[in-house]
Image (cartoon, rainbow, N blue to C red; front, top):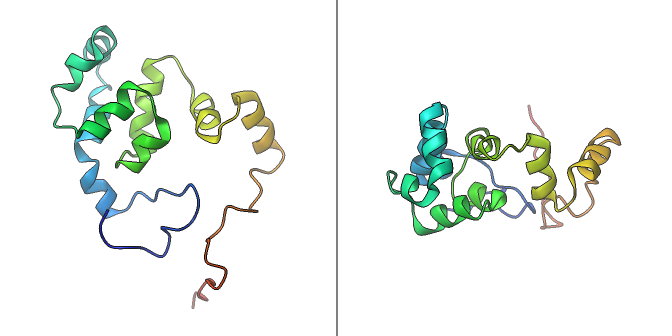
Amino acid sequence: MSKPHDYDDIPGTYVYDAERSRVGYALNMFCMSLNKVENRNSFKADAPAYLDRFPLTPEQRRTVLERDWLGMLKVGGNIYYTIKIAFCDGLTFQDVAGMMSGVSKETYAQMMLAGGRSPDGNRNKDPSATEEPHG
């Protein structure tokens, strides 16, 4: 990503903006191909060969093959598309959210039921940054 954004220093935040959309286009089109049962079957049978059909970067390819869920977001993946890979693996959104949070899906569910992740340490790293009033 080239131009810095005011949200770049928020820990764990990978905003799917226009730039990330352009970077992740091929990755997201691969994910969308998994809407068809024959493509899911081909992907499950030989993932590396199936990925050869798409002009993925080496890093995008690695994230898919290693099921690096946060990595996919960093290299332009849209969570609504990348979750299709998880569904091919028999995983739920809650499974993946737990993995991305570094906890079990049960712990993740309890965290969400208790009001979500604490904002401590999950805000802008720049202590002088303040939100602009919306007019």
